[in-house]
Image (cartoon, rainbow, N blue to C red):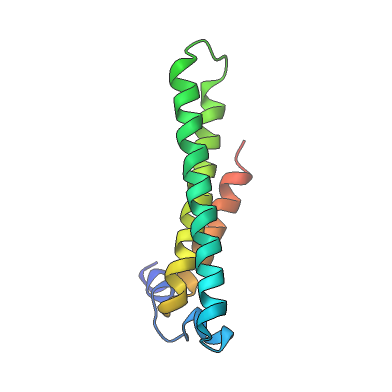
Length: 107
């Protein structure tokens, strides 16, 4: 198990920005779009939390909790993509995407 996590944080990979030839205009385009998408995810999460707090008569509050976790995981995935541009652990954003897929399949 420790080897699994060591592989996620291993810096043996090249940074994500290398695949874009380290061209600043392309990197900033992807970083800016991922940042805006992450902000949108967190705004949706905030609005969902406000809605659930105001409506105490919701029949299935658990569904909104699972939806909140899914939305939070989506925002974190985009933040991890930004982080992987300048650093080498490409496996960490991929692990974040796998976690999001598991949340998507939860009952």
